[in-house]
Image 1 (cartoon, helix red, strand yellow):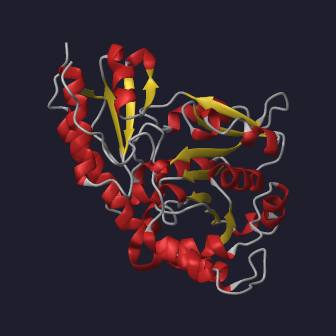
Image 2 (tube, helix red, strand yellow):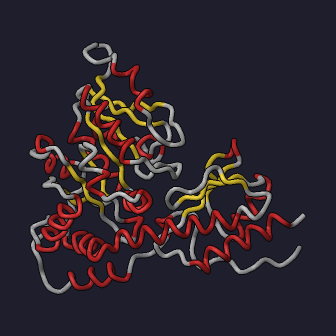
Image 3 (cartoon, rainbow, N blue to C red):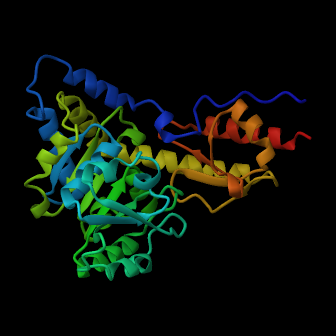
Length: 350
């Protein structure tokens, strides 16, 4: 067996595998100087909320939370009553990767519909609109989408606007799980207000952890009628951070000088670079060109163990021989080149 090239210094398993931006660590250290009031009554949290409102271009109610699942729970629970339901795609994070947390904490049914390349299309929710007013059925109330989707695709602002219009015509609310919202904005060529405020989104989980943060996300409520009880929901859900200044400091650092967008652009560019290199092997087939920071590819499935042993990544869809390679803000061109070279070398071995 021929010797393999050295593995990359980063992980292509997840953008969560990266550390934090140096600016974020510096901000945490600076916030650690002396005492501060707890539970968000501090200048760092206040500054983060102000910065978020500025970047959103909207006077939204904003609550900081520990993590993505918790932030989704807070946003969704604020929008729902137990007899109501959430409509989302079958591949959504809230369906597949949150251990049933939204259903448990909201008391509401999560109704999955078939995805189209990870996206929810308006026609998919049509049949459930007929349930409105029928006491035997859970009442549709929230449509939730992931931006970026779990399959690495990105909704255009126009697609989000169409979904929001359909929702609002039928008295539904639109929730966006924005764990990778920065990557979506960077990929789209549109601004965050154009993607969220102007399209009619009602609630957003604004993700930071995958984009240079250590921990902490933001629940963004763009409808004033959702705001009055949201803080109580956050407390019940265990998402009120006692030392909130350390979340606020991170968010301020990431929003300053567009670091959040620069980080996302780096991740997206590295995914495009990786896709361009791996297709040089006739044994790698892209499922689709990367739209953000995920490369979805088909490989000879019998070689999966060898590839994972050399540089670990996650399989995606074994039935279709699909894997997912993720890039992050800290992924460097040298890492991409090393990973692509190793994949090619392993697959070239007889």
